[in-house]
Length: 207
Image (cartoon, one colour):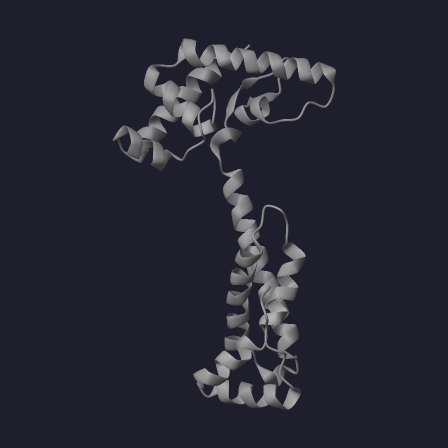
């Protein structure tokens, strides 16, 4: 368990802030070190089984450093209050960026339509939890159709690329860059193969 220094007294903080504004590196470091407990406190709000505490603290420290470097005592706001907002903003920005990257995965690309004419994506076939028994049956049917299409419609290289990109048929999900390195081709070429394969699958799913 990490041990953090106690917060500074009001007079000590005022002195260090004044010195920090004059470019005193030692004062700046002292302000950071004595506010690490605040970082841990804010980071605790974002802890989860999928999120390492050390990583949250590391990101939070970046926010704390920004707070110390930009704090203006003339605005009559306590450093701890200002720093807490900066730390939280840094954590939220990191979490939003991570969430955005997950959403950008091309599994959202349309491959066809379902029996009711709604858009159907790879994500819908592979990941969407069934809401009732009819949807469960339809999802199973789509999975069987997709499995059949993979080997019947795609060439050997297209099959390998699409299976490795989406973790199908026992393959581990990988990035385009990783696949390109394995096959000895460019990442843009892998992207073209993937798009061509998805287009062929889309044609098979058209009613």
